[in-house]
Length: 439
Image (cartoon, rainbow, N blue to C red; front, side, top):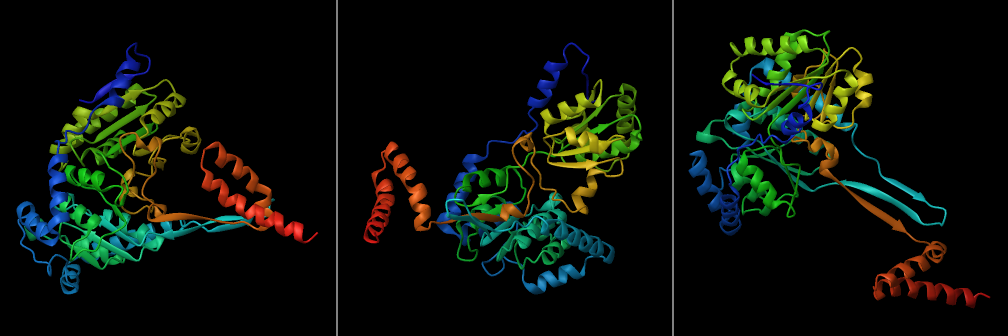
């Protein structure tokens, strides 16, 4: 059974604090191994990638077969059933339409001193998208990573998607095709991250790496950060549902289980202002676990990390939610917009009982790559701006330099940076001399 907490209990504060601090990952210390893999790939390039792929994925490759051929992609895509193709195409269309609205605009203006200022946005030149293989091979993640990059204008997009034992998910290849990705490498793990970051004879290096992965992939992304940009280090999935009594307990139970079935370390929390409703949801979860296909995963997640919190009112619920800063937040209440207005921290919010989080995972439009482990307090989900960079621009006129240059000289002197001040002073001296010559 999950934890039951009530804000009226004397020990609520300590129990809630323990819930927030709960360690949900039992990841082995893989950093030393990852460091060796990265060093090997940097030293031996393709040979190291091929050797490691044979060791971990039981797949023999050559430099020529590391990437899927156009014929292989076409053949795999042909295997996708029509209904799945149509669903993926609809998802791609909606995700693209949503992310197009995120494209930023350049700006230029002249300030009161006559200085021209502004910024210009531009995409990174190349991005590498990591797609897990095996049981965690999700075509929806391909769309969520590749489409924002394409919308941003990234010229070169590659995917690394391991195929253990040579098993290929045709939907992943179709998703890549729909996202405008032509080059898909059948490699994975830390070796794929290293290859994308540092390059090999076959794989040209990229500027940014995004996408989820196991502990080895996460450790590799940490290590290559700085050489390339990364999106985030994602932890186990999580959902918080705030629900009042005017809901179907079975619906809320399915929503909680929708994240619990991802991972035994996933976390599902219900906050409600009605204790009886909380009990009804807990009973519904127990009943649904009896027939859920992934009960062997969802059951331990709900048992070890699940929680039902009873509050005195929804104002209190909103305050607790902001402390949790959940990855996914459902507001299944009578006035979701009113409650949403009180909230500050969440990766993605789903308003009303007709908006299950699963819509966001696949077809809604907003990105499902979201901050976990309370990092929604300071970060956002994956978006077009993650594949862009802003370059500032400034132009001084003689009048503008005369107006603000002396202050720059003063500040440079206060910091002991003589050349800084001199670069401004030389120009001001020329301007003053020219002014004298015109008198």
